[in-house]
Image (tube, rainbow, N blue to C red; front, top):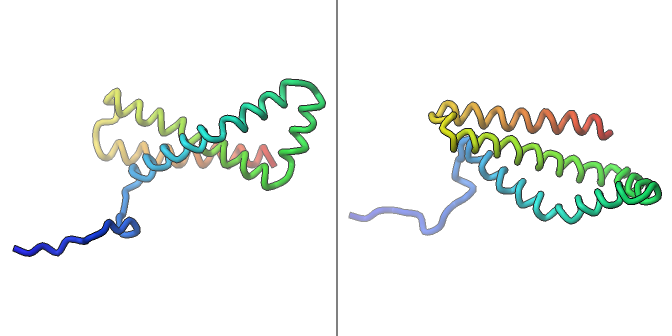
Length: 124
């Protein structure tokens, strides 16, 4: 019996369902927030230290690229937060079937992207 198994894992051929993408994005957003934590704490320190450092911070984050970075961090926070609530609901057995997992994944994606859009409107 000869089986024709692949010798390598073709990642581009794997079709993940939406809950799989939400899981991967949850991990990526958590890593992004972890590595951005020094920058976020520095921004907090500049905003609270004095009026001079606050105006310096405002001048630093006023270019469009800086606003895009802040918007990306806002998306990472919102996605990580709502996906974490989804996983908490799964752990508490509030979501226990495949249909609930798919619907909650759609809700996480929609809510995080919608709130990021509103934050972007407010930021610009």
